[in-house]
Length: 432
Image (cartoon, rainbow, N blue to C red):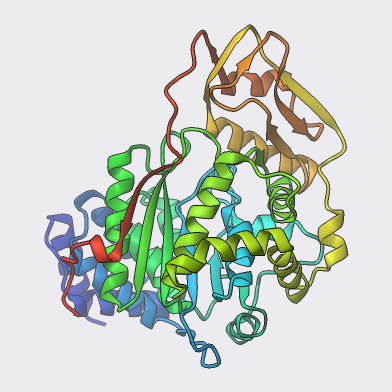
């Protein structure tokens, strides 16, 4: 086989040139089919991460990855089908809450989710902590469930953007995950293949996120919204705070408990509630619900128990049971982390908390984890509880440094830093 074209393409990208759409299509098709091995593709993604991808390249790569597998459709649903995506955070239980909530309000949600990456949690892992629940739904079953009960949360299958699945694993191994163009193409290719008509993106910014600054998160948010518009779909991107964990619970199973308790009305942590309700409102707006009806529908779905009932239906449809959902509880072994002195909690290291929770789950099971008691801005006295550890494998002294105690409270940070809607974004990508 003549591989001169591939060497020339690699050299061009290495030198900062843009590759045309036919070249990207040829590369992705060959890699997905196994006729191009990982060595040149590793070189290509490294060059793309260093040199960047222009708008046309991002569109071309996204198109090629979508074409590598099936594209889902929902023929028995008359209105829009929506999805949401988080760029990864700590204590981010929004998906488990918002999917059944939005479905209970009358807009179907087809949620393709991922697993934990690094210190961040994965929605699939949280859902699978509920006994019996499975997320490996084949495309036919996934579509049928969305049409039947209005929602599904499933994993990417071998038939949906298989090229992205291979490419993401390679990027993870080669240290090229953090590239805006590659991230955007990966995310949007899955959403288009999943058949969503509208998508809400939650792009995290801060020390606990993959995008550490507001500028970096804003750049990814704009790219995602513009890219979705190129495929004739609608999108909104929120830039949200991840300087501290979003919710109080950190760990797969205890985050599932937090989602259950939120929908049941047992406990609604304010920062988590603010992010969740904002995303739910936007999904309903994009789903065609009149603006005047959005808030009443959300409040009614929560107050009536319809949203919690829909979570139970989702759990049952995916192999679990309502009884199992009601019965989940944190690991029985509990210890607390105390404040070393009087003062105010001025910072919480989300990366340290996320990594500690992940290690707890690995050692003590899915319902081990960490519950944050004192949030940023909370006054504490020496010895007062900062966090509770569920599980026996983590000593409190190892978690204590994740909390910074100062003499004065830091400025209050908003949960939502920016909102970018498709109608406000100037689409400068390839004309469709």
